[in-house]
Length: 68
Image 1: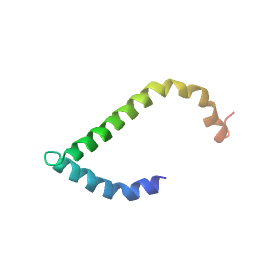
Image 2: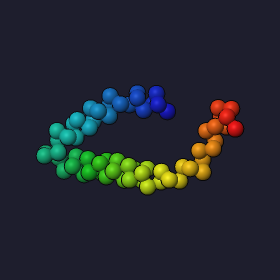
Image 3: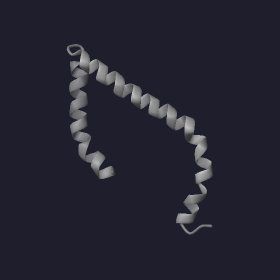
Image 4: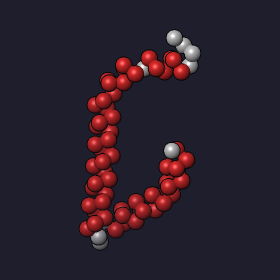
């Protein structure tokens, strides 16, 4: 998955740059940037809010490394 995401990184940067430059000219660019920005903020909030839920799963980490 990492290779796939990194493979699209250059294309994504170019598209994002185009949207940032076109915000004043194209209303769709403003909407797209708002949606992407909102998704990033919502994801960060969700990640922080669910962080305490990881504790029941942390015992699996030791099992994979031979530490019981």
